[in-house]
Length: 188
Ligand SMILES: Cc1cc2nc3c(=O)[nH]c(=O)nc-3n(C[C@H](O)[C@H](O)[C@H](O)COP(=O)(O)O)c2cc1C
Image (cartoon, rainbow, N blue to C red; front, side, top):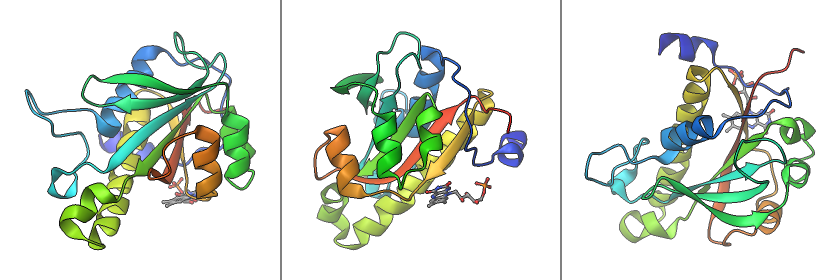
């Protein structure tokens, strides 16, 4: 654990090396997996256990073994992925992120979104703050899990929200808060 914290860095150069399904499964588990035996609580804490967050995986062409290029939504309950959009959208996503084109080289980009109404029912406007804090927890879990798998991650907060929603074809109520790119680091 200490090594993962010490070695964690935002990496902005990735190799075109395939990830295996187990690595992606482990990353998604660390982000939002259900960690409570016979329960519903997840890897990251959530105010009031209301879970306003979703994690979408933007997978590139020839990027993850056994997964076709596309956008997938992570379903914590079944620990599964459901297809949202087919196609390698990494270039478009990187362009929507103020043309940070290095992101398009990462085999996978994990988009963390919040649906504020799930927390607003209990906490009102303060729920927005809670969801943003939760995104940070998920991001750090992903960073540390990537390290533990011998992978590297990058964090991106600079992007056009609406463009991202349109490109990914996700519900308008799912507000993107963070993108975490993951892959094998390239020598720079
Ligand atoms: C909320 C947030 C948004 C960020 N957005 C970007 C971004 O859009 N592009 C980028 O290259 N780095 C981004 N970063 C990464 C920071 O630049 C990086 O964390 C900082 O330089 C410290 O480096 P380290 O993460 O390697 O320790 C972001 C970090 C955070 C926490």
